Structure formats: C-alpha cells, structure tokens
Image: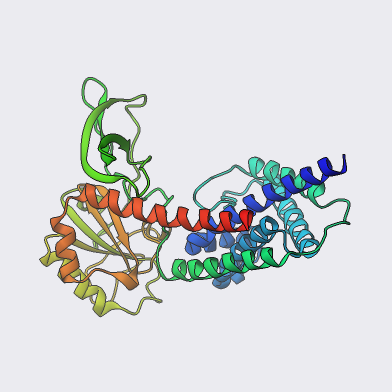
Amino acid sequence: MKGFHKGIRRFCSVLLGLVYFIAGMLKLMDPVGAGLVVDGYLEFLHFKWLSFAAKPIGVAMALVETLVGAALLAKVWRRQVAAITSFITIAFTLLTLQLVIFNPEMDCGCFGEAVHLTHLQTFIKNLILCVLCAIAFLPARDYGGTAKSKVIAFVAVVAVVLPFTLNSLLSIPLMDFTEFSPGTSLTAEEYGEDGTKEEYFVIYEKDGKEETFTLENLPDSTWTFVHVETSGTGISDPWSSAPVFYISDADGQYREDLLTEGKVMVLSVYDVPGYKDIERAEQFLRDAEEAGFTALAVAREPLPGMETYTSDYKKIITFNRSNGGATYIDDGEIICKWPARRLPDSEGLGKVASRNPLEQLVERSSRRRIVFQGVVLYSLAVLLIL
C-alpha cells in the first residue's frame, strides 16, 4: 500500500512537471508574446505603469515555470520545489478566479499562443493542478534526498534552456502559432461552384516509398522532400475568411491589396522610437525591389524619410514578433519570416525570389519545428531517464 501511494505521488508530480515545463517552454519560445500576456494582466490588476517591464517579467516567469517543471521531473530538492510549485499554483488559481468573476477581454496565456483557454477553462485547469499538488506533496514528509545523477540531469537541461531562451530573445519563435503563421493566406479563400477549394499536399519519400502529408502534419527529418501537389477539397463553410493584415497609405486609404499580388517583402516595425536601423531598412527594401519583390515598410507611424504604410500595433506585433523583421508573402500566402538581426542580404533575397515558395515554406517550417521538438524531447528524456 505504501508503494502504491508513493507511485501515485510520483505520477502526480510528473504530470505537474510536464505541465509547467511545456507551458514555460512555449512562452520562452515567444518572449514578445509572453510580454503581451503580462501586459494584459498588469492592466487588469491596475499596474499599467509597470508595462515597460512586461517583457522581462514575462520571460522571467516563463523561465521559473520551465525550471520548476524540470526540477519536478528530475526529483531534485523536492521539499523546496514542492513549496515553490504549491505557491505558484495557488497564486495562479486565485488570479484566474478573478478573471472568471470580472471576465476581462484578455487571454490567460497559460500555454502561449499554442493553446487558448477561456477564463473558466483556465480556472478549472488550475484547480486540477491544485489537486495534483495536494496528492504529490502531502503529507509533507518522506521527500527523500537528491541523487547526484538527478542534479546532473537538471543542470544538463538548464544548459539547454538558457541558450534556447537567449536565441528566442534575439530571434523569432521557432514555431509560430499566431494568426499570421507561415502557410496562412491573407486573401479570402475562393471556392468553385462545386463547393471545393484548393488545398496543398506535400510528397515526401523514405526507404523508396512516397507518402502524402498536409502542411499541418509534416514528417520528421528522416523523410526527403519530393514535391508539392494541389487538390480540390470539399468545404463545410463557404463563407469563412482568412486573416487580414490591414495597412493604409499616407492618405489613409486601406491598401491590403498590395499584400495579395505577386512576391511581397514586408519590413514591419511595431516600436518606431526603439528602432534605430533606418539606413539598414532602406537598403534592405532596395535590395528586395532589385530581387523582384514588391517591398513595403509597415509601422505604427511613418518611419523617418521612408514611404511607410501604417497599421495597428497588435496587428504588426502579431505579424512579425521582431521589431524590424521581414516577412515574405507570395500571392497573399505567408511563406517565411526573418528577425531584424538576420535579414537576408541582396544575394540571399535573390535566392529566395528564385526558389519555389511552397518548397521554402515546407523546408523552413519543418526545420524550425524539428528544432523546437528536439529541444523539448531531449530535455524530457534527460530528466526522466537519467
């Protein structure tokens, strides 16, 4: 009976660790998004004056969640980790209870952009976590010591999480879960008289066999890309529409039509005062024009000395998480994105323009997804096996 109870406690502790670790990693992957979530909470709690620190607070909280999850999975310093986990879980539960009561228009951000929950769903989720804490940590005795191998496992994961966090701060999310993720069409979906639309399928080969995948369900790196096909597929809602990125010119006229024709390269700036690379932006847009793109600068307000299309702050920061980042659109479909620090040069833009856009979409999206999944799976394997 004692062994059964110990097993149940360990099972609940592992569940808690998985929730905290995955939730933290999803937010660390998107520091800008984590900052937006914290900013929403600060406004709700009437601490809007702290908005300048929303992003650092968001990253710090996500890092704490990740490390707490890793510690739970590794079974290190269990008494201290149990106290920290219980405190965080109870605090989140009380906070989300207020969200249920007052129902503000905001997202809980528990799992970043990957999973969106209602306030009630978030509160119920936290209640379940409280129950898991009670089972895993009570009675508060017989936690046992910390094995040296588990400390090594925890340190090994920290050694991966910290560079991952730094890369996220300097780049854009490895996996984009926003409404403007690569593969999203900015044009309204067009349907034929027979109620069908065009859908893309990707053909991959492995061990002499070819299989068909959708863009949302790509295989791992052991498969080799062959080509892309299109097929007419039935629909259930012929009136559905794709996300629209509203932009307006200097005269106030909406010009999102510019984003839906041909090859378009958009350089977007959501924080104009904080953007200091005007000369580099101008050079990038000139290079993009020479490579055959329609080059557009989009910002919250006109950039100094540049023709600028303006848009809403939340649209711009959702469109590309990097302040001064670039986004490639082909006939209204978002193909790929670059952060401000890694904008392609003239030669790189030429290569991008000459390649099949769908091949680039599949290649970049699958590669970035594999990197993120690899980091998570490596971490979980080290924590649970060592």
